[in-house]
Image 1: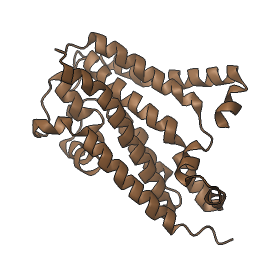
Image 2: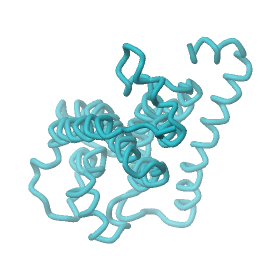
Image 3: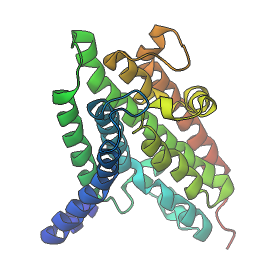
Image 4: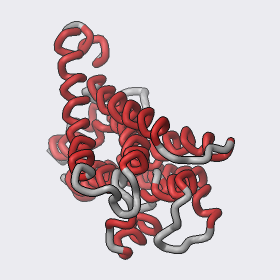
Length: 254
């Protein structure tokens, strides 16, 4: 329904999608401007940073397209309109995800994919079948991990009522952080996004293997391939949190 309503005004859709693409591109322009003054950033060249940027932006863009509406859940909980979703014979999570579905977010995916394509052409990597397969694995697993964070953040709003900014700090903030090499951040922060909120498995750890870079935490080499089980575990935990939150919902009492 939301896609059909969006496409009624096609010019408006294309302009908003273009605006979304342009707005996202400014992040990469900032990185390019940095490299006009330095040759490496955290030990990474511009094509290597572009590889990080392209993988995380594309993966996040997919998750944002599918579940970016989760930040509206807090408003529905506060005003009681979530009750309407509970009456329909459709999973509540699917309805929340489809609420005001914004097809314009394809602009972010397109921009990230373009940067990734440029990086794959320019990056100095001895490609092997394993490294080639790791690129789509990063996109799929990264989208799954970001989606799990979106769902877990939505589940937290059942108790906090208004925690969209906490969720955004982990989703939008995490996406911005992963665009840069891990070496530019404090080791404690890198540990946090590896062992607490495992965003490092979106692209940092597998990218280190693809690019042939050392792990700043000195983890075993097999950890670079752990993104699929980590993504599965994140989705399972997020699903459990969502079900627990939904069971705790008691409407507004009005």
